[in-house]
Image 1 (cartoon, rainbow, N blue to C red):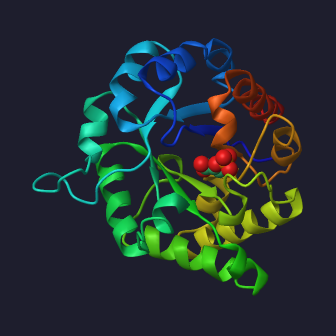
Image 2 (image 1 turned 120 degrees about the vertical axis):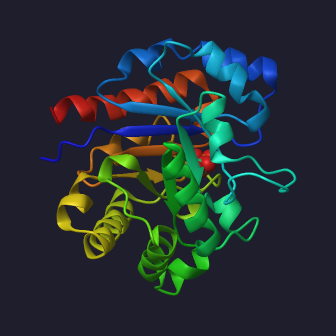
Length: 259
Ligand code: PEP
């Protein structure tokens, strides 16, 4: 059985305000207690990062940015560098979330630069890949996953522990429609096979591959029961402290079973 420690990320997207972000972070005691058998990170909006870091000081829960710049510093109005995230106490970052790939047109080439910046700054990047509904229905889902992975990892030689891959089918994000455990596991196998081709089998078997797309307190345990699924990236349900705690507990149970 794989020894990979499960990972759960909570992507708050552009939700909450400062008071509610602080309150939600303060309610994460149960989640923090599970850390050890599961790694947990939350991704608040940029303006709230420093405050959330302060609230979670001493907690094993990581705080991360929802994005970082492909540039190191300079005249890039509105952008936030990987170094700035580290400076305010972040230790993780989302790279290539579909709301940036598809919503903002970020290409694999841009994302490869972002990934490079994140790795050189010492952040744990969560690299997101996944197909649209049209790509799935036309039988291209696995090709898309391979292409996005190859493009985003181009030129990088990460260690398996230095990043996490999130398989997030676009049609399942924020829609309430979850991939079946079979479909998710099949996609995860494609991710691992691509990583084995790019690096080696040891790498592909050691790296954590998590699922994202309408994971909730009800679906988490069934998804995480699959050997290939090492946890989840959670949007909507991460805004509800109790639901997020249930999801983390499901991943923690898997972490315990793997010991
Ligand atoms: C996400 O933001 O990565 C996500 C999967 O969102 P949701 O859980 O709301 O589908």
